Length: 565
Image (cartoon, rainbow, N blue to C red; front, side, top):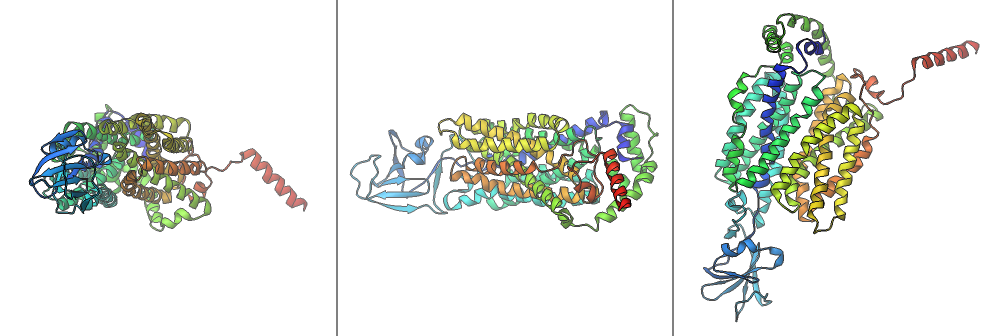
C-alpha cells in the first residue's frame, strides 16, 4: 500500500485535517509578526544633538519656541539647522549629528553664519528626539544615532542570521525527536522570548533575545511545512503548503496595525508576542504525524492515530492497518535512505544539464527571499503613510497565492514562475521613471513587485521537489532553502541602499529578478510529469519524447541497415 493510499482511505483534506491544519497554521502568524516587527522597533524620529547650557529660545524658519520639543515636530534636516540660544546669550546651530557655536552673535536670526565652530556629536552626547510620531523606540531609548546608528541597523540582519541557524538546528532535531515536540517547544519559546525582548534592559541583551526569538520562529516555520504536508494528501498539498505563507502575510498586516496604534516599542512588542497566545492552550493536543511514527517503528501509536482520524472523519476505524503500510513501504524506504547516505551536494552538479538547473533553482530561491523581504521591509521607505504601506505589502500576498496555485495547476510551474519574476523585475525597474512627487505610483509598482515575487517564492519549494529525483530530492530542497536564508540575511543590507537613493533597493531586486526570470525559461516543465526516481529520469525532463511507434520504426530501420551491411 503506497503512502498516498492513506489519504485515499482516510480523506485528503477532511474534518480531522482541516481542524489540524488551521490550528497549526494559526501559529505561523506569529512568525510573520516577529520577522517584520523590527520595522517599528528601530524607528528613528527627527533629533538633534544638544549643546552645553540651558536652552532659552529656539528658532526654525518662522517657528519659534522656548524648548526643542516644541519645534522638533517641524524640523527637517534637509531644510537647514535649528538655531538655539542658551543662558548667557550663546547661540548654536543644531543639525542631526553636529552643532556649531556662532562666534560674536549680534542678533538672534535663522540666517546661517560662516563665523562658527563646529563639533560632531559622539556616543555620550545628549540627544533630544521628536516624540510626536514615535513616542519610544530602541533608537530613542539607547541613543542609536550618529556614530551608534550602525547598532540599530544590525537589528534585522542579526535576526535573519538567527533564522538561518534556527532552520538548520530545528529541521534536523525534528527528524530525530518528532514534529510535535518541536512545534510545542518553538511555540512556547516564541512567547517567552517575545515578551523577554520587551523587558530587555539594554541593547546587547535585546539583540541576544531577538536572535533566540529568530531561531525558534524559523524552527516553527520550517517544521510546520513538514507537519501539514504529512497530514494532507497530494490532491490539496499544493494549496495547503502555499497557504502557510498566507498566515505569514496576516502576521505582517498585524504588525502594521499594531505599529499604528502603539508607538511605545516595549508595549508594541508585548502585544505582538501575545497575539497567538491562545495557540499554547491547545497545541499540546497535537498528534505526531503517522509517517514519523511508522518510520520510528511505533506501530501501536500509528494504529491509534489512524483509527482516530478515521473516526473523526466519519469513517469506520480499523480497516486501515499500520502493519500493511510498513510491510509495503518499509524496505523501499530503507533502500532510499541507504542510497541517499552515499550522495552529496556534488550530485546536484553531476552533469552540465543538472548543474545549470541547480544554479537556476538556487537563484530563484535567493531572489524569492531577497525580494520578499526587501519589498516588505522597504515598504516603509516609499513615502506616504508607512503603516498603510506595510499593511498593503502583507495584503497583496493573499491573492498572489490564490492566483499562483491556480496558475501552477493550469499553466504549469515554469509558465507561472518565469512570468512572475519577469513581472516583478519590470515593475521595479519602472520605478526609475517615477517622478519624486508621485509617491502613489511608486507604491503601486512596489506592491506589484511584491505580488509577483510572492508567487515565485511560494511555488519554488514544490517546483524543486519535482525537478530532482528521489535520491537527491532532500539535498536539492535543503540546499535551495539555504540559499533562501542567505537571501533573507542580505535583504536588510539591500534595504539600507535607500540611504543612497530612495528606490535603490527595489531597482536592485528588479534587475536581478528580471535576469533570473529569463534564466527560468530554460528550466523544464514538470506539470503532469510523474516524480522521477533516478538521475537519468530527472535529466530527461523537458526533452522531447519520441512516440513509441516512431521509436520502434527507427529501431527497425536501423536493424535492417545493419543486416544489409
